[in-house]
Amino acid sequence: MPRRRTLALAAIGTVAGVFSGLFGVGGGVVMVPLLVLWLGYGDREASGTSLAAIVVIATAAVVTHGAYGNVRLQEGLLVGVPAVGGVLAGTWLQQRLEPRRVRLLFAALLVLTAVELLVG
Image (cartoon, rainbow, N blue to C red; front, side):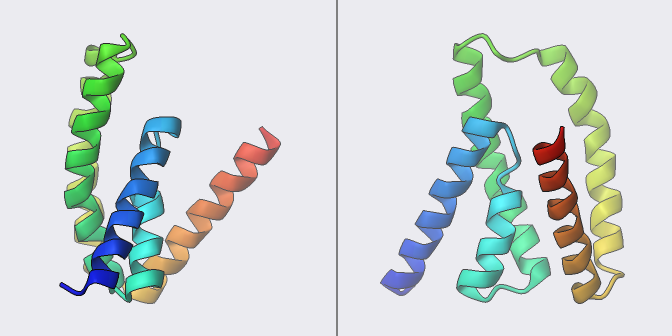
């Protein structure tokens, strides 16, 4: 793997980890757009790669937050277990939509989230 690509991947991972630990947002919010824009990944490849990385990021984040006493395990399970069904449904849907449509939906979600954060 070329050095520049390795450095770009490390930078994307670092930014995603900081956002995940600081704000509790999924690293995918950061990783997917950067993998597409910086490294030319396709939308589906960026999503899949991001999901694989999130397993590692989330594990480290929950251990660290657990050390601070910030983890409510029961509530986490009540959110996380049904989310598995959502992941399966979302992945199924993503494979059936045009990549451009998925990209526009993701962009709309980011804009709506930004507006909510600014107004709320």
